[in-house]
Length: 45
Image 1 (cartoon, rainbow, N blue to C red):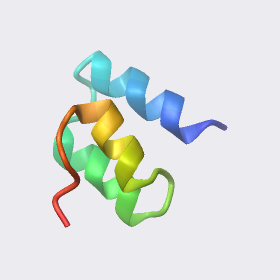
Image 2 (tube, one colour):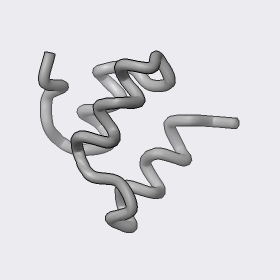
Image 3 (cartoon, one colour):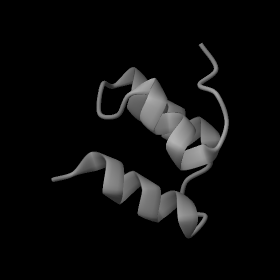
Image 4 (cartoon, one colour):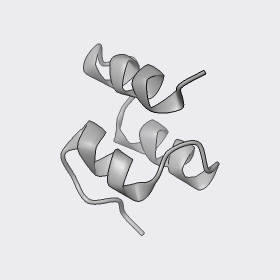
């Protein structure tokens, strides 16, 4: 499974919010750079 594409798709459809996407960074499924690409915001470290 390509986590980035799945999370990006869900975020674009408003199924995930920024906090939910950030959780995937914590879990190591996406990087902080990918978080910014998905949300348009810096990852809240």
